[in-house]
Picture 1 (cartoon, rainbow, N blue to C red):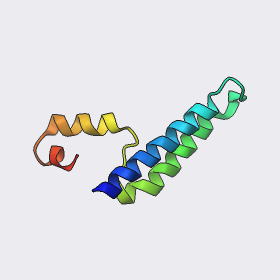
Picture 2: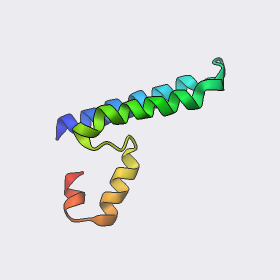
Picture 3: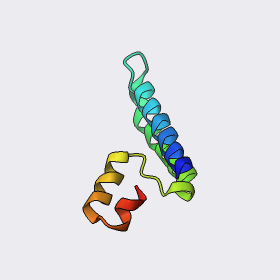
Length: 75
């Protein structure tokens, strides 16, 4: 369980860094969308087999609260 949480945290952190660095005012933002999209694809390819990732903890938690039961226990 702890390894899944660390994986989610690291992947979300990396994704946020990519977003922040590619949309910085000092950087030419022409390819920002492509960079963000490709990094999101790579993050999903890496972490879906490990944790069925969402890279957005709020989305995952909200769905678990909505469904309740076993889904909420897995959070």
